[in-house]
Amino acid sequence: MLQSKLFSKTIKNSPEGEESKNAQFLIKGGFINKSSAGVYSMLPLGLKVLNKINKIIREEMNVIGEEMLMPSLIHRKYWEQSKRWDVDIIYKTGTRDNGQGTRDFEYGLGWTHEEVITAIARHYIQSYKDLPKAVYQIQTKFRAEARAQAGLLRGREFMMKDLYSFHMDRADLEKYYGKVIDSYNKIFKRLSLKVLVAEAGGGPFTKEYTHEFQVLNSAGEDMVYYCDKCDFCQNQEIFNSSNHKDCNGEIRNAKAIEVGNVFKLGTRYSDAYGLVYTDKDGIKRPVIMGSYGIGPTRVMGAIVEVFNDEKGIIWPEAVSPFNVHLLALSDSGKVKSEADKIYKMLVGQIGDSEVLCDERTVSTGEKFNDADLLGIPLRVVVSEKTVAVKKIEIKKRAEKMPKLITSAQLKKIIN
Image 1 (cartoon, rainbow, N blue to C red):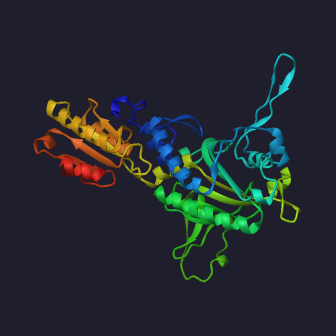
Image 2: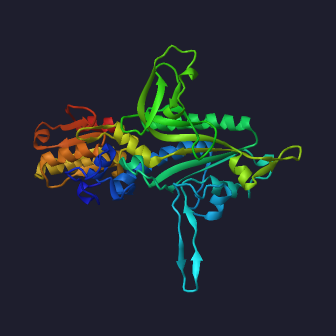
Image 3: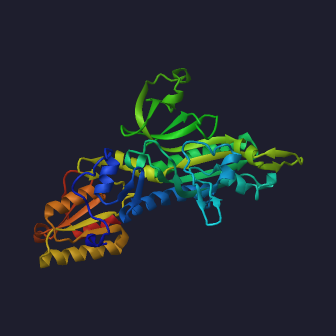
């Protein structure tokens, strides 16, 4: 794709009022646009990144569940049935006059979907033969956060992948719970995020202990305590050093960004909604449930917080909006001809959607600065100097020094 054709443009100055790196770099780079506190539009560049994150999530989730999509507009009766209509975090609709008196429009915008999926499951789960089941969705959520800040790390409107599972007994839930943790670890590894699995409280979801997937980073709002030798890790709210046994490792603490969580819901929602199944002996029993979340938009923000330098973003290859950034440093005949040749070769190898070509008539300094800000993994430069020696210059975004190679060598590198 030609850079001059991009919908968005880079911004030289840092956005006012944004202190987090992810908000600053993503807005400056033209990945997102801020509508209001905690509410952002995904511009084409940002959506490319988000789609790649979701693709990785889907590929792992499809191994352990089926994808579906539930409504965001959820009637009051569903929230009241689970006694969550009056939580502070929910956005509620009101009433309006339709000309014939006041009409009630009391709905809550979906901040989570345990209520909806449990009501749906009653139609399809009646017997032990119908279990276990697992479904997930990737959908926009709405939460009335009192402190919407830190860019994509804490929003009022954001994307969530939520998975729900249904089981006959506790043992089957425990087995599946472990399978989800394994799947999450694969997802975050593919996203280049090193996570700690931290034990935590259940909050408004469950009375049981839950597990959070935490990325150590100073931009995080959570404090976790973890062992430098074993897998012991707890959220500050439930930290108890006596639980660290049979290990002589040192317990450390650090701020972290929560990018995922898993919950053992038990029968809380199945009891509220009458979700039962008939076992082999004809006895009706409550369905055991689990809930598992990953925030793709928060993951995007976390990746930027982890992978950056003073110049901009350093995208991991798996989620970068483009794989190669081609810069033509002159519009002279020889440079333009060589850049066009390299561009066609790159497009032929990895496709137009993975190559960004900066053919704009701007200064060399602006092109280099924009390339560093956008953070595409591989920069390829064609200039008067490279043409003179029949080479091209390449530099990985995370490396300091460029090097000269031939076009044939570049073709091998990107294969």
